[in-house]
Image 1 (cartoon, rainbow, N blue to C red):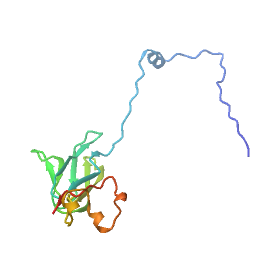
Image 2: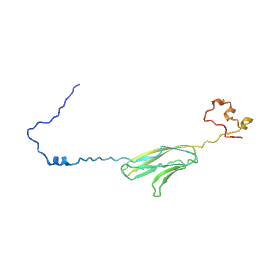
Image 3: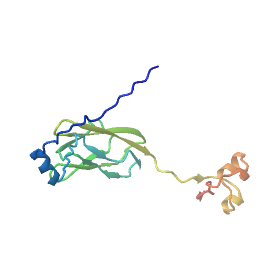
Length: 175
């Protein structure tokens, strides 16, 4: 392995350097710097996951910003689940979405923003819907249950009530 050493220096001169007019002006001038920001695609600000119960409404805004100040076109995927609608302003601009799921499941919807220069950004929105939690209905016979002395359905199926978790509750309705 070899090493190379490079030395840089100034040649000495006995003659004085002539002062140029550009150097004289530059000494009095203020130095300026120009920074050019390259073209960047638009930014989409949207929730990545929407959760709703079947029949309930979930709504959120779709905010798009273009760092270069270009006009932006927003497109929401053509295939959306039932109950999904795009919300627009009176001028026809996309401002958000509403979703009232009609069945339980999980879907994805792509939101695409394209600026005047053709630069685009795609964000994926995941929609998750579930059925509303149903209250437990306990049908049992016996005076302790009918009197409401704290039996739940697991007690009648052979479970040990000592292992009942903190989140478990007693029956809400006894018939």
